[in-house]
Length: 112
Image (cartoon, rainbow, N blue to C red; front, top):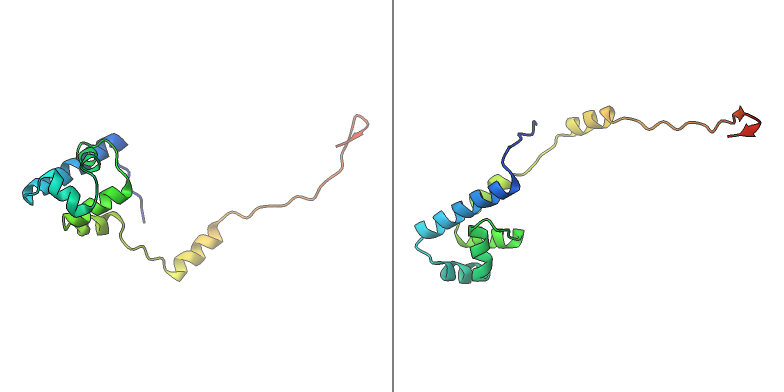
C-alpha cells in the first residue's frame, strides 16, 4: 500500500471540509441552529467547522452524522486488513538490534 501525499496545508483542508459541510447543510435546507441542535453541538462549534477555524473530531463526526453523510467517514477511515503473510514479511525486514559485548580498551593508561 502506497501512501499518497497531499500538498494542501492543514488550514486548507479545514477550509475544504468546512465548505463541504456548509454546502451539504444548505442543500439539506438546514440553518446553522437547526443542524447544531440535530448534531448536539453548539452553533459556535458548527460555525467554526464551516469556516475552517478548527474543530474537534467529535464535532466533525457529530455534524457529518447529523447530515446523513457517514459515507464520508467510511472513506476517511476505511477498514485496514493485513494478511498474515504481510505481517511475516514485515517482521523479517525489520532491522535487528545488535548488542555488542562491552570491551575494555587501554588508552593512555585508562580503562574506557
